[in-house]
Length: 351
Ligand SMILES: NC(=O)c1ccc[n+]([C@@H]2O[C@H](COP(=O)([O-])OP(=O)(O)OC[C@H]3O[C@@H](n4cnc5c(N)ncnc54)[C@H](O)[C@@H]3O)[C@@H](O)[C@H]2O)c1
Ligand SMILES: [Zn+2]
Image (tube, rainbow, N blue to C red; front, side, top):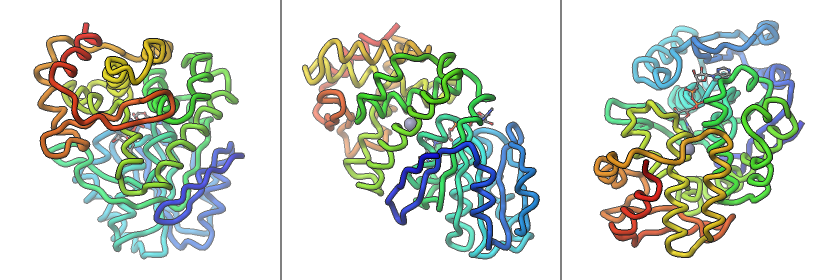
């Protein structure tokens, strides 16, 4: 068992073990009511939890982004109301990032804040969504527009969950792991370079080490800078173009797939300014391709992507801000990029 401590609004443990049901049961002691949110697509075996002394309420919500809709939110609030949930009760989200984002937001908003536990079951959920305290749902005007910072009291990770996760979702989660390697931990890159999705499935030690290291990167950043000023921006490496591509694809691309292309683009921008070497740039492509992640995007999309870049959360006023590397493991902010530089880098990643 490994525990990583996140020191944000409050300190909380991220526990990586093969005993999540026992860990969760232990943390439910003294709770009168426990609400477990799961998706209709992926529900784990909750048999152990049924023996708890607490009243267990299992709420099944729609899968994926539908979980993060206002309609689902209202439904869950009503369920909590009908079941009489009070401030000393507990919310648990077991599922991908969509479920943990919803569970966290429910916990932030019901009675102005209940404790909650994240049990992420996708790789993206483990290394990204469940750590950091950002919770939220989608609005008709865009993804994650409604939300709150509300850290869980614990995050329980069991890599056994990954056995049933699709190769595509494994690869998408690896894009975030690889990002953590580039911004802060070269050992992630070394380990990731020796593997593929298939080989990680056979190697519990390697996937556990990658998860642990990626969470440590995120936990360190979040602990230093909980509410998004510069340090936290480093986690957005690859995300400026990534978010634009995700939006342009109407969310047909996984977040991690769009980020993979964004990582290569940000590396191209940095290489053109000699902030990183050609071989450091190529390392982005080699590692991402080993996980069959995309590293190029449609040449004809550029005109539609540029206005979307300006919508990115990191755009302040009229300047578009990119997180770039100034070497592996160190990030800087680029704010003075000319259109010629942006165009030229896109040309080099377009197909
Ligand atoms: N709060 C944050 O800081 C943060 C960070 C990153 C992403 N997110 C959010 O996370 C969501 C993306 O997370 P995701 O990639 O996990 O997507 P997801 O939650 O939609 O899950 C992807 C699919 O995998 C299924 N699944 C999950 N675990 C499984 C398992 N073990 N076996 C089989 N199937 C499984 C899900 O049911 C779903 O169909 C987005 O909504 C994104 O906005 C939040
Ligand atoms: Zn991301």
